[in-house]
Length: 233
Ligand code: ZN
Image (cartoon, rainbow, N blue to C red):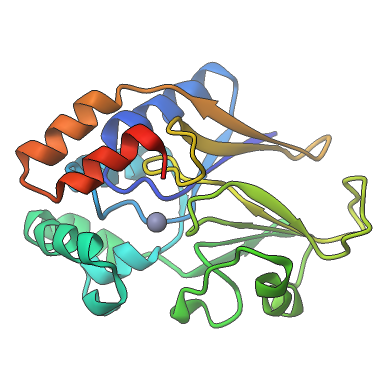
């Protein structure tokens, strides 16, 4: 079975469509979304509608949480805050209800899915280094934990001596960001986990970010949110 794990879409409809089309073409059986469907970009409702159609397992992200009043807007940077004020006004009642229904952690079939961390998930900690990962490993009850939040794809191993992907060891896999990559590569990013042979591939795909940028500018959202899609930072 092939599982696509997507995260941090941030209202980028073009990037989300690209990821979903790729999953359909390559025989992905299920798409799991790790949250931050909204924030920053200009298509929050359209992205939520697509996620509702294509993903049964969906986690709450910090921007989603801000959109429904659970997470203070002050925790977002200036651009994020401006975009969130706009997003809150755009959200349909139905989609607000949908975001309210999302869980923070999901554990199923020996896999853990969470937006930021299983340790104090409501604090939205950033897992960037083995040191950051330690409290997560301490609270992890199974082998694989899929996270997003940093917008930087990667894999963290509990034991740094581990050189082979091994079911007896534990790993944290960051799926990267569909809608706003921050690792210097502007292409949309997500990962595919093959549950039969235990391989994980990070996928990078070009998409029409000019259109996404135009929509951000037309919506009078901060220009920086459009510009950063060119550089991938
Ligand atoms: Zn995010």
